Each structure stands twice: as C-alpha cells, then as structure tokens.
Length: 457
Ligand code: UGA
Image (tube, rainbow, N blue to C red):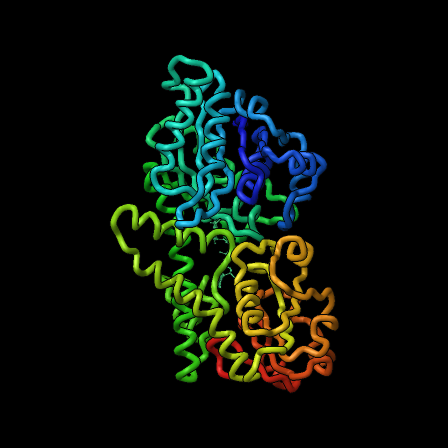
C-alpha cells in the first residue's frame, strides 16, 4: 500500500532512502534547506557521486519531489524520516543541531493524521526520546493544545555503504526498527513490505542478488535500535583493526596476511568480509561512530577499551606505511611520492576522514612532495582539501620523476594501469601498496620493488 513519506535531508542516507522508497511505490517529498541542492536535484543532478543515482532519479520522477519548505513536506506525510548530518563535535559526541532543527520543523507542521517520525541519522542512545520531546514542544508552541496520539518516534538505523548505497537499501541484510509505540512499528513494517518480501521488480541496473530471500525485520525498543547502529559499525571497524594488527605480526614472522585472513574468514562464525588488511578505515562513519561510542561510554561511566584499541591500531596503520617508505628511501624530505587514490574508499568521491589524506599529511610533515591521483575525487579534492598537494590527471603525469608509488585507495582501475610501460617514468621503481590491491608478483616480474601490508616482500 502506497504511503506518503517525507525525508528531511538529502545527503547519502536521505537521498538514498527517498529514492528507494519512491522506487518501491511510495510518494515521497525530500526536503533540504540548501536551495542550490534542491534546484540541482529537481533537474536530476545528485549533489555527490554515487553509482546509479541519476538513473534512479529519472526512474522515480513521478513519485519523488523536492522542496526546501517544511510546510510543503510534513503536513501530508504518514512517515517522516530525519536523515540529516550529525558531524562530530570537538569532544566526540555528535553535534545534533541539524536534528534539533528538523524536529522543530516537523513539530510545527505535523499533519492531522498519525505521523511516525523516524530517526535515520546516526544519533546517540536516548535521541529518540529527545526528538519526541522536541517535536512535542514545537507543536505546542506553534498550535497550543495536545499532541498526544498524533505522532510517535521510531529509530530505524541505516546500514548502507557509500558506493553501494542504492544496492544496500534495496537488498539489505536486515531492517531494524525500534519504537515504544506498536502502531509505529506496524506502519514501518507496511512501508518496508516490498523490500522485506522482495516483491518489487529489480531495476535493470541493480539486479537482485542471487539467492536473495525475505529480509529479516527486527523490532526492538528505541534504545536497542540506537545501540545496534553503533555496535555494528564499531564491530566492523574492530574487525578491520584486528586483521591490521595481525598483519604487522604476519610481516615479522614471514606469513601472508591475505592467506591468514582467508583461513580465518572461512570459519562461518567469523566470515570473510571486512578482513582486508591495509591502510585502515576512514570515511564519515567509522571514525565518527567509534568516537561517539567512546563518548557514550564515558557519559555512563564505562571505558570501552576494545573500541579505543581499534582506533589506536587504525592510527598506527598510516604510520606503518611511512615507516616502509623510510626504510626503503631513507630520507623523505624532498622526495616526490605518487599517491594513488584520495577517496576514503573506491566508488565514491567522499574525502571525509580519508586514510589517503591522513597518510598524505604524514608524508608532507616529513618534507616530501605528494602528487595525487584519483579517478573521481580530484575536483572535490581541489575544492576541499587544505593540504599542499599536487594533482595529476593521468598516470604519466602522476609518475613522472616520482621516487615511489603509494597506493592508498583500492580503485579497481589501478590494477589495469600499464605498469610495464609506466616504469621508466619513475626515478625509483618502488611500489608501497597500502591496500594489498595490486598484483605484487606481476609487478616484481616487471622489475618493481613491491611492498604490501603484511605480505612477504
Ligand atoms: C560503513 C558501514 O559499512 C555501513 O554499514 C554503514 O551504514 C555506514 O558505515 C554508515 O554508518 O553510514 P562506509 O563508511 O560507506 O559504510 O564504508 P565501508 O565500506 O564500511 O568502508 C569503511 C572503511 O573501511 C573504508 O575506508 C574502507 O577502505 C575500509 N575497509 C573496509 C578496510 O580497510 N578493510 C576492509 O576489509 C573493509
């Protein structure tokens, strides 16, 4: 049954939610206060790079509209998602200013019927109660009178990965909804039914994965749903940190961490994913969410030592790459280093907390020149990055006269660069592959000195 939905915020989470709900048949209004963004979206232009967004935007044109005004989006909506940014504040807990603004806009404009207000932004435990109080106050200030029974708050954490945002929201591993109000749970179950049952026709550009069955729908209390989101992200982060820590030991004892990870990951209790050793994790989620989890622990008098250790190992991983370069080149001052990749992972132009940029900063601090390439993130880097980097558009420009190649982001295309032809451009044929992404044996045959992370040199 088609529902009327409003989504506040058109970032990765908001826009993807709006698109996938419109795709499965709901009528959706997406709201953003940024007029330029809304104008671009109305013309079919997403404000960031993410596979398939333009195709999806044109597919759902009839069911998805955009606005900057709460009065247009909220009154008719049965379900309102809050999907705004929650950037970290200096002490680590997320800054909830945008959530507060959204709750106010929603409260002032609540419609006549029953509305489910859904927290989709990643917010600390307790935010469901907080949003409920804000919506209630805003309603009373605007209209006087009682708001009881007119709305309920739910938490519906989002687990999508950048670069696969639409895929993850159409074909999720699970949908988690936390609420104290039974009607809210029921409304959200109906909203997600086509995804839970996988009853919608798959878009041609995003085929349904083989063996995809019904999607589990987990209903919990508010606090549990809120904690699930942080727990999942922190667990993934520490899985990566664990294999990274082990990769340092693998190097010492002459083991190959890729074989070790395969052997560990074949245990179905552990699973093979997120065991790729490398430069460590970054992006807008793991760093922020682990920090927020630590802040939550402190607030409740607990030290979350495993999460703390995962962050420390992650920081050390960038230094390990610098140490490898130092041990080969001895002096980094005045060297030109060719950096492959700037985005925090492939298939995105997102540079937030990018391990590549953190590595670049360490190298610049040592007096090296860093010349960087990225298949999609260069325009964004030129606008946003505040480091004295040089940028190269082509492999030739990147490698000319460089003292070493450092791979920081595992873009697939780097594997197919003509490394044999490019070799004479380099001053030293040294490759430090901080993502274990290139074919080290093939490079060694071409005469490169190849160093990976936790793999035999
Ligand atoms: C992450 C989670 O995977 C999503 O489930 C979650 O919804 C999202 O955060 C969020 O909270 O919004 P994302 O940050 O888009 O998604 O990226 P991931 O694919 O998880 O990668 C995070 C970082 O870990 C990247 O820097 C990546 O290079 C690194 N990574 C990943 C590794 O170093 N090794 C691995 O094996 C996997």
